[in-house]
Image (cartoon, rainbow, N blue to C red; front, side):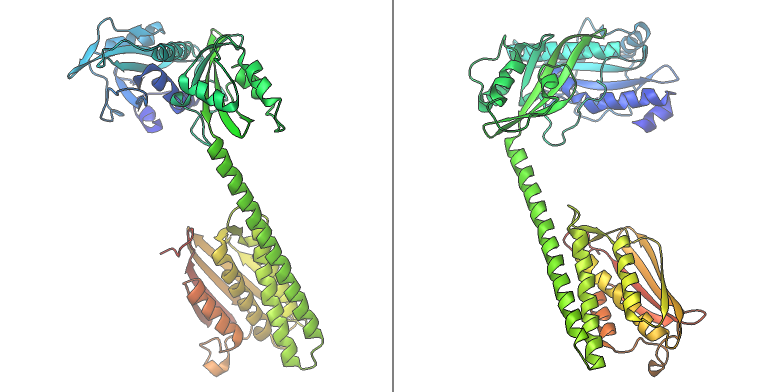
Length: 492
């Protein structure tokens, strides 16, 4: 829509945002009016171009094809132009025929800060030809009030709760019309059913809705949203939930105004009991998963502590070194689970964790050499199933660099460079040490346990590739390439 506006007209950013807000919330008007809505923008050449359209979910549509981007027909332009020039709604005296059915049209100016910046065409299919019911009459009257607010620049409502997120009520879910005092003028059958499930007995007409709701919720131990009275009385364009007797209703208020004076409200309601129950289940499951990660982390730290104690009692240097390596690997896995226990997502922010692990690894691996670890680039969010093997691989590579790269030296540097594009990741671990082992002709990493662990994790767990090479200027460079998993499977 923004591209069409920039192509055909010159509007201020505030005007463009106003049109976006209107389109974001005009489905309610379309459903109440049983009519198609088309947003027409006046162009610099005197014509009109369709920016957006909306079809009703409560009745027959007029436009079966998408007309966004098309220009208004010649016969419709005078009506649209009068709406802009006179800044008031224009209703055609005679219906216009679309093939075999007649359509009643009304052009409504979209006013923002006292200026008409566009026109909404309200097009009603007259094909049914039957007498409207009481529900339909109340729907149309509510739509008339909202359309009049559009022509006065009072709709869309600032800070309104729009969109279908988290079970937002729609027109067909249940509608209540309120007067300026918050008394019920009309309640649709679906709305009555919603409140009956909440525990309200009898009709709602003529009653103060906030008093009705108060009698229901005061018997419950559940906390009450502080904004609920304002929503139930139709004084604020917000949303709230009302819960009683195991039933949850989502309420959305749309105040109706006339030149700034509140004349009533439209209240949409929907039974969201099942949705809220599932949300609570998900919250419980998330809390359980986090608790599991926390307990796994504690257990792993206990195992690492036991290995440390056992290593201290060893007199054989090789055995002590093996236990210390096992302790370091277990501690690295514990760091991953600690990060997972602090978030609801099954993803790990790897940068901070890797930084801590690398510093610990460099300090533990060599007490005689002061090794500095440098990281360039960002790992970002990494799926949990990739975080553990990746952290272990990095730990092993840094450990190998520290233990075998700086013999007889008092200082050295290990650098980790990260390049990531979406799920593709390239990691280079390099050191300024003595280089690759001479036993392998200076071309391979050797065949120690650490190298075997790295190869197994990279190829089997991460599905990536790893290569060792000599670093320019001396030292060793290890390049790791992998594609992170997306969700539960391996990315391709």
